[in-house]
Length: 426
Image (cartoon, rainbow, N blue to C red; front, side, top):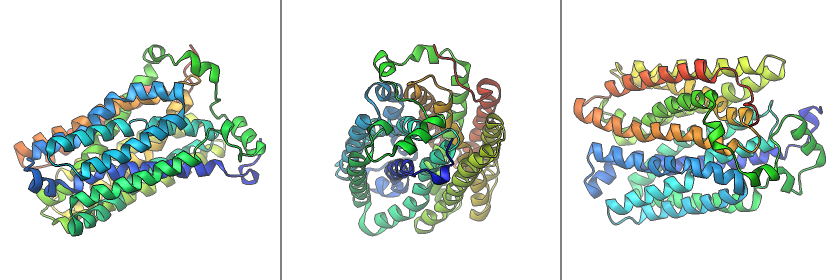
């Protein structure tokens, strides 16, 4: 097999294109968390109502996971990606002009539908474009964009909101979303369709264990029923659900936690919020991406390396328990940074697994099934947290709840997922 250093690097253009899509994707999601006080002033939202509104995106996002996984395996990344990118731009503009809370809920529902193919599509596309030894870093680049988006998006959107109002902050994400639609429309192709991909690089990708584009298998359909009989699928789904619960708790409530519990004003809270997400961006890229691939390329057992990072990262996520007893912004941010940093290191490994274990042309279906469990957690986290904070006037119990759920996810990764190896073809 050729050395990566002498092979053209067109495949990395696809990784950065998909990463930009994730960046835009999370601008749309965090916009709401920064706008809580402004929406309260406009629509009279209570803490519980804000919890429901925060999870509204995840309701339709979750419902669409299984269908979009099947559609991706039948219609392909290119067609589904174009439609979804256009729709999520429309949904952002719809939120910007919302005359009332019902309209706003509708815009969040549409956003959930339109963004639902993003991560299953990325898993499928990276499976086509990257060797097994490079897939960790490629996945980390796209996954780290979610953390980096939050790190830079919270202060940027916060400044837009402070100086221009919440409607302009949603309109801005609409314009950026449309830019991604244009870029994706003209750039993304599967390897077999890309006329500028050299035969040398194409051979390198295929020889390195990339997923094959099997048109006959696509037409015959993916066996969802077969996948749902596999223990590994449930282990991966449980672990991903546990990760997503804590991730979305912090994504939707961290600015409010800093202002409600630690009495940090909005201007400072949006900047403080970015610190844990910047740390998570670094661990995502350096540990979950570069380090995993580098150790595997040096000849170490790939299963053991990935399983170690997966479980150790989730274990670091348990640091969220420390934030339950923090009495200063500094202490809280240290504990939350440790938790997010560990979870971020585990995330690229988890997103690599569908393309490593699924039967041919079932990556989209498997990733959709796993992400469904993740989105059930994403729905639950904002709502449960809203009720807990309303009842106790504290985030302590919310962080303890996340700790328990993370422990369940670790059990799923160790005892149900087990070795990261292919599921037998049906």
